[in-house]
Length: 76
Image (cartoon, rainbow, N blue to C red; front, top):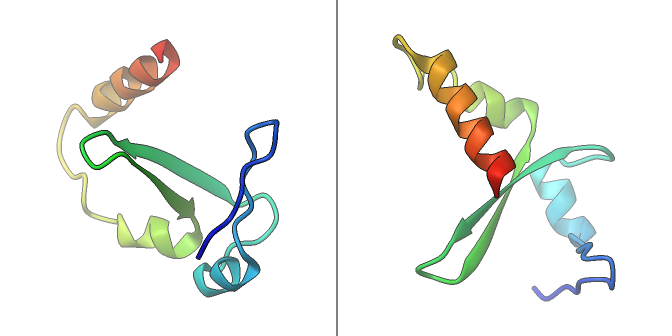
């Protein structure tokens, strides 16, 4: 499915996809870049997505790792 980008860099996600993924107004979207494949990966941060992550990051030092990751993101 094709879409377009506006002059402001905004993209339109087709309504069929938004409904399928449970996206509504103000849904946060995680943006990742796969540089090897030259792809942009958009992941909607929905309740289902957050529940799927439960238990994935158990262990010590996660707060420091998260702070370091946020710092790297700000530097980009």
